Length: 61
Image 1: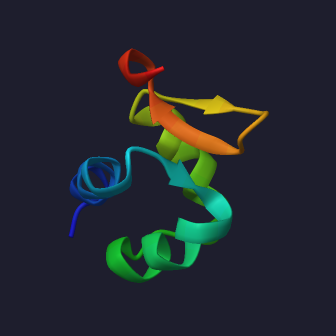
Image 2: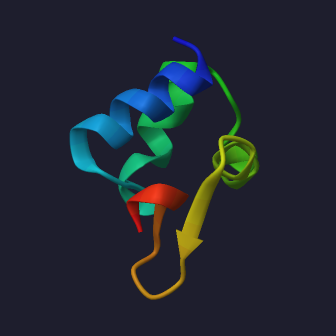
């Protein structure tokens, strides 16, 4: 599964991505390294909310 597909599926299912909940699944599904998680979230255009610890699409905020 591509990283973009994983991000789209996870956002569609939950409405957000949270590192604590989703990092392990991200690594298994995409083969990307754990240290690349935040990089890929930013590259996909997601925004991080420091209060909730969640990544969301900008238009969903």
